[in-house]
Length: 115
Length: 112
Image (cartoon, rainbow over all chains, first blue to last red; front, side, top):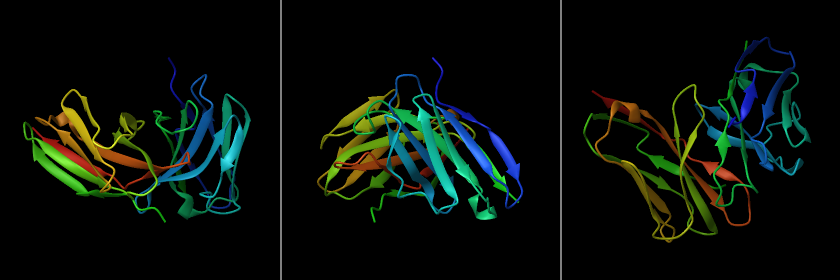
């Protein structure tokens, strides 16, 4: 079975450019999470969706970040404009009915470098 | 602010040694604790989901215990192998939320 699929795997972009990260959750999973991994702060939850609806976006750092889930099989995380401090690994994860007691499956991450 | 702390931050052991690390979390409003194994450039892989005080779970040479009253979980690796080298992450879920709050991980390196 295909796991959580993220693209691109690696992106290097210049400061000020728009970055769009994509995620395809595991088929049948109805919760989707976006995480950011940095050396300083570890894995932080940015936003999560249940049944395509954003439930909690309190982790989104600022207005430059936005996330959408137009259908059950696709989500995007957009940064506009990007800044060097956005450089991190962005993970998408999915699970069945949220994370309460259920295993969350992670994608392989999108490694973003903003120069 | 919910603090999930892991110790030690990093650990170097010889092949065959047994080792353990700690995850500390808030003891109030506990719902679940997850353990993950993460190798660089790969997906974090779920090891255990623990929900009950006193839970003990085992997967091969890896096991974990949970104490929700005092707010800690231990992960044990028996007879470490070089392929066990990875970062081990724990994540706490507060009651009535869907948020996994991660610790910063314990980075384990096993030398042959």
